[in-house]
Length: 275
Image: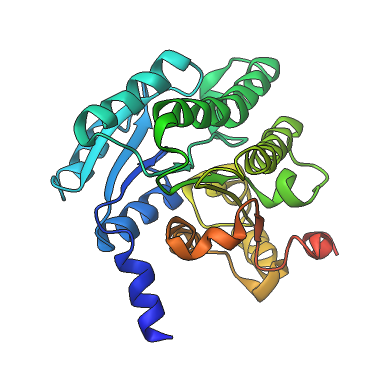
């Protein structure tokens, strides 16, 4: 068992990973995991937002393994420019991690009213992820049947696995679209060496989840909410990052097409938070 774990980790050495949304909780944990395993990582930050300086500071911590590019998932030109910058730097992309997204609170920066925000949610979370996948497959088209590749999409337990009353419709819809896209791509790519997966995290201790849910609660309400969750705790970002790291390895190929419930049990017992 020990040797298998070591092989899984060293299998990423030298691989080029394109990670969208590298400055959030899960994305930042992914960067740490990937570089520890010897991968080269191109991670993105939200173009026009306040994370540019922080992103370049992170990239400077491991300049041989990290680069960063701006990305606005609403626009195909931004997606293509970001991914082509990686191709110019390292000549290829082996693994795509579609992690960038907006939540019910963070989407407020993209619209002055609910209608505009809902449209932005669907455009960024669903259409943006679609266009990242399409651009990647176009860029690597000539190698899809000769070289192994991975596409790892981030969905959510809400929309990707289950339905939770009271959550924003556009949020769940966008995550359901990502789960569907994963299955559809997997079905279409069975004659290639591309493996496709989706992960559906539950209540994860990220800045996005804090902004959308936890920060609205009093200390007592937050304690009661956490106690109602499976295992009576939040999932930590590094736990999701380790699942992503496994999926990025060669050992994940038999799971091609899987939409993975990573909610610690909330997906099979969604009523816990309301029981």
